[in-house]
Length: 406
Ligand code: CTP
Image (cartoon, helix red, strand yellow):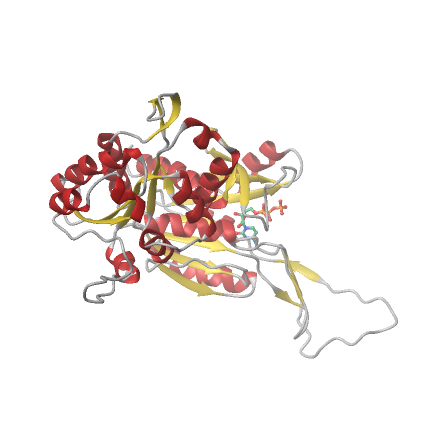
């Protein structure tokens, strides 16, 4: 009973693979999950609600309300109830609507309001699956952080053979079990994430800053939180912030404030990820009033800020794991490894400004992760959500080794 007490919504769309949903419901229920089924109107043509209601022991939801008595089927409540929203089979049409925020049936409104993780198992003909539009839509869902269970290759309902078959219910069940075991991987673990830029004031209206949006740090914090960690998120004035009940957000402005906030909590931290783009220099003094325009040149004297990562590196115990980032423009690998040693980090994530689509403000990134033993993992250009999941997986292996579990 590996899914005991788990609440799962199963979304079924109009695809011939819908008949397999009956087996899937049975397998999920057998493992102890409580399953509520939402169907698109077309899905009813492929499998009867009566079959699914009997197997799931719950009424089937198709319409926004019950036409007989006006009872409202609240997609918001449904989304809050669920620990996982599994859409299997997911047709090309539904995937396209999900990717574009279309909300013309209960399955889709539930998707848009769901707070829980979403898993999607596509099923369609091979040419539909291969079409750039479908592949782009699947990419969009991955970018939203949805988990996609890849279609398999084999005989299709059209008589053709190729990639597009929904994964078998037994394997979907394994993915669901794996997902839930991962979702508690970091319970009892406290993670510190620094994120965003810092602003170093010159006078009441001006500051030294940088282009960091805070997206990478946000995705990392959310990935840890989704896997059960308690996260302390210390952020400068960024454009985005994480949202998850496990995440405590501490907003600071300057490098010094970030340093103080990080130092204060560090002794209770198991893993620290330094994703912030901390200003390296700060004005020696801040003018109390706005500096007036002069006809002459002016100079502002700067002093280095405290290096937060290096300071935590000095004080860390052998039970704490410290992860830094390196943003390099030349001799990237060499400089990153040098930084890892100098700051006494366990892992460094190298961002190269030379790579298109990687770095500060965008939604994608391409990184290389390196540990102390020079184990290197290169991650190709993908959404920051996916890159964050890969970084967190790499950290998990290292953390297990550190705690003697690996
Ligand atoms: N970092 C920090 N505190 C600072 C400067 C950097 O904690 N005052 C952290 C960053 O969050 C990152 C790592 O150190 O995890 C490397 O940052 P980076 O800017 O690449 O390196 P610097 O040490 O500033 O070196 P340089 O700018 O000379 O490359």
